[in-house]
Image (cartoon, rainbow over all chains, first blue to last red):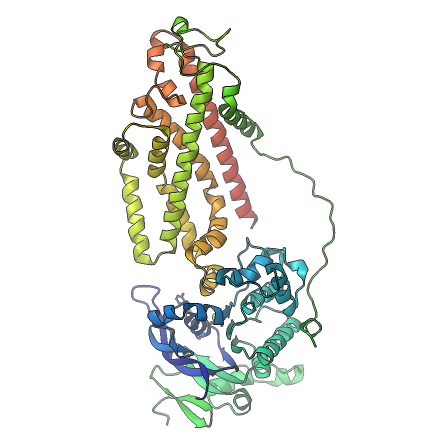
Length: 299
Length: 294
Ligand SMILES: Nc1ncnc2c1ncn2[C@@H]1O[C@H](COP(=O)(O)OP(=O)(O)OP(=O)(O)O)[C@@H](O)[C@H]1O
Ligand SMILES: [Mg+2]
């Protein structure tokens, strides 16, 4: 691995909502994200994508395993406190639900500039307002939004405000948890183009979590497929789409809709393969950089 | 190519001027607010209306009924009740506001700390407030009084404030528990926002409306508490004039059938309390309405 920005090592996380209930949201996930790449993470609802993102942002403390960010172990409280400011500035999260990630009582200007205020960074463009306006422009909003509250914005405008807030510190790693799921198609394309543009211009690294496979195909350099808390396949995006090996990935890819109703109608309905057996499997490198989860018995 | 032409601004409608909406007749308690303002102003500037010293005992004019030189009459010691009302009101209102300030500060600090704290600390802090809540208030007050020595208005305010924050703290803690899981608080924490930043920007604006009612009721409660304590003789000494200590004289006054000594401070006290109750209820209604509008 030449230049890994983030490394997940045997990461597991279990929720314990009740005394005798355990939900294993992540099971032994290991992979790394290279510096400057856009890493796509796809998988069905409830497979643990958000949990992974939240572990990476230190919102959840994983039950076992390690996450290394630039060699700093994020699960180790002491190391984390030592690099607190660096971590707070360099990692930013874009939430899945834009309505609840913005304080309904704050105006857009203050929402967007909140990271600057918290980190006590002098705004590079003179005033906080100018800075907010610049960031809004870069996500396709104009200054008329500055004085509005989130309630007065549409869903896609809210999501763009939260993207602007994540971008204002010019972070190194942006964890985007389904940032475009609530946007209409033209805006989706814009936001995705924006991400690509930002990545080319500034070399940001993205962890891009999505449902929409066509966007992942367009945007991401490498893609991981998750199912039931496990990473089942990991490959460069082009390779994954042209040569899916895991049955679940194959089913997922076959479910991408065609823009042709006749072909669409003739297609068999989506049927996910039976879930993985509970036994532990291991990611096996089938061809260079192409990993597939295989249970020990299959090999 | 700049960002601007790459990303067209879409999805923004222009704002058009609209005629101002017709005003519904407001149900604001105008009368209560006016009366309260009058009483507060009178207490603040009452000294200008009368040249008499409220503490001066004019032994030639004891127990005079209202009228003439003494608009509200004089008490058994010959003090002018008109000037006593204003200077006594100042003390009573001061105790009301100061003790509420104390109790609100404690409640906000304690409630939000407990709300943001991890489970075990939260449980510990809440058990503590419950213990405080279950000890009779009067007991704590008497105990603190004895620690502080001779009672003064500031001392009484502190004692009442320190004993009346628990229920407000519980409300705040419940609100904070809900708010702290909302994504914007999580986001602020990820960005490195400290406890006070989150409290000021994200928590306080969201719970302030739900404790407004309790704050007003707290002022009211503190004034009542002061009167009760003074009436029972464990509050302010007789030579510190407040509405409460004036009422404590009434027992003696009733024997001489001078009803005004009891009635006039009582009237002012009850009017003030009623106005505050009214205001508090109006506040609560407004908050509830806003919640149901959401
Ligand atoms: N706070 C929580 N307490 C208990 N269980 C949880 C909690 N958060 C998530 N889970 C469970 O963990 C599993 C993974 O949740 P997660 O939110 O990571 O899914 P996801 O992949 O993000 O799904 P989606 O695509 O719908 O956002 C789910 O089965 C969910 O029920
Ligand atoms: Mg999710």
